Amino acid sequence: MKNFPITFVILILILASCSTNKRLLEPNKTRYDKIEFNIEKDLNNDISEIIEVIIYKEHLNVSKDNLNTTKLCSELKKITIDVPIEDNQGVIPPAAPGNRYITTILYDHISDEILFSKKDSSFILSQNSNPKRIKIERKITERLNTTTFQKELKKIKNGEDYDFYEMSIPIFSLDKQTAYIELDYRCGHLCGNGRAFYLRKINGKWKIIEDFRTWIS
Image (cartoon, rainbow, N blue to C red; front, side, top):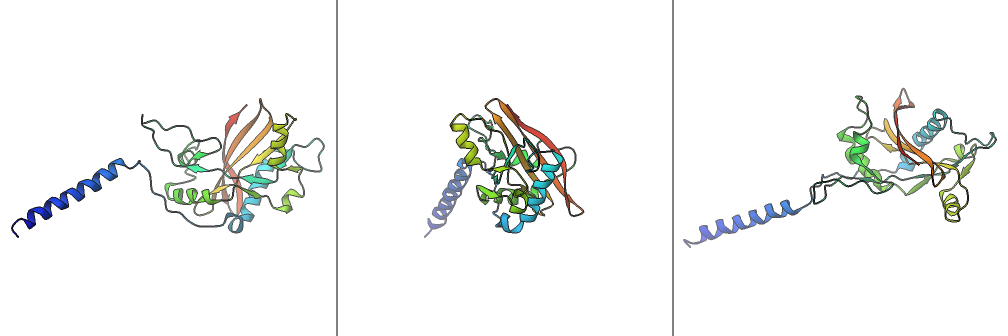
């Protein structure tokens, strides 16, 4: 019985050591709680308004009524949001093609004005559960010269000429008053560019606050 306290203390120390070592071996990841929502159901009107703002402000020649118009994909593509993690050399590798680091959306390319904040992090990451593609509302596409990404991809694979715009599914802040969206223009292997836009809902209307180039070919 006299040995019991010593044995008990040793056991506690071993368990504590194992717990500490386990934490040290785990990757340095930030925990984000998943927030469930349906973007097509909950934010459909906002998405449509944002699309129309981009078309108007960027003077996209995609109307059916104009001659020699460029086609717009009738589906919005999802941007996958990643959490940056250092490799064994302590370097953060570039995000996978088509993906964006959450730090890029929260902080990069933004002026002194705060658009997204840390409290939006969980909600932004929860949007990884969005569908890969969602259709633009018919009330918009019926006025535009549209195509689908699959049709354009077939042209690309067949070596045919292609010329089209494609937008991403907007990424929203927790209060649904700020959004991030990307616009790509593809017109050949050495022709095209991409832009990203931060928008804010002011007095019930979506307005572009910041924009920057994401790529150019």
